[in-house]
Amino acid sequence: MGWAIALHGGAGDIPVSLAAERRKPREAALRHCLKVGVNALKAQKSPLDVVELVVRELENNPHYNAGRGSVLTREGTIEMEASIMDGNTKRCGAVSGLTTVVNPISLARLVMEKTPHIYLAFDGAERFAREQGIETVDSSHFITQENIERLKQAKEANRVQIDYTPPIQKDEKKETPTANGDSQLGTVGCVAVDSHGNLASATSTGGLVNKMVGRIGDTPIIGAGTYANNLCAVSATGKGEAIMRGTVARDVAALMEFKGLSLKEAAAYVVEECVPRGNVGLVAVSAKGEVTMAYNTTGMFRACATEDGHSEIAIWPSVQN
Image (cartoon, rainbow, N blue to C red):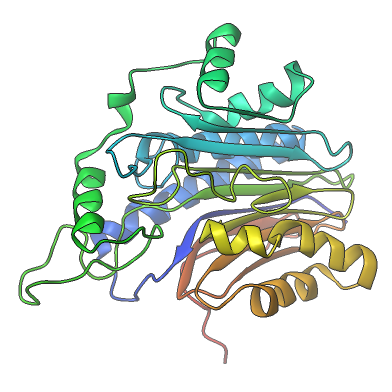
């Protein structure tokens, strides 16, 4: 048994031809956030503190679809959501429909710790944020030129799209700013376990490009996008509707609890058998310090580290010799 941590920056149709100028900043962000998490675990911070800290770092990075880099709704507005869960107590908090909160994951934790509820959304969540004195900014802070362009592309194609949906090329010789399958951003999440087997999970997102105003995805749904108990902690990413139908995060824990599967076996079964191909990725850790990062999409921005020295940062499947 030892500590372990894993994080993701979204899963989807990420082509191996992804341009270096788009790939490298994301890899650098994963590397930085992994280091932040590892240092926090080594400093004996609780897994709950660690996952919040790491997700805050990812929310502050405009290269991912959470916080600062959140994608836009059909009306060109921001609606962010997040959730966090403690494995030992099963205490959890979730938020949706945020338009001004800099770090949604921290508001989700305050919902868990400062209210009798689990889930607050829209005006009520924004009001609670102001009451708690959490950092807020004008919603224009979150609206980037890249996301305005992405929304335009999605509207032209008449579709609601996942973070890494390839843009439709009207002129193959002329690349759009997000060409080669790059939708720039990805939902973020982190799971951690300490050397005592304490577990926690956290997930944050801006949702889908061109989503209807008021749409809620899997990220804030406990048991779908986020789950933790005394066996494992899971954070999922991909197409929210498919993840909700598959109760992805809870099913990993349930297979371990009721079928006696290992963490890797449970995650692999859920990803390959419970959700249609091309729809989901997840990161998970167990109370024993095991870690897995499974997905049925082309790729998933991901990173992990364990106390025994294993470390990995990757996007696409590893080449097996």
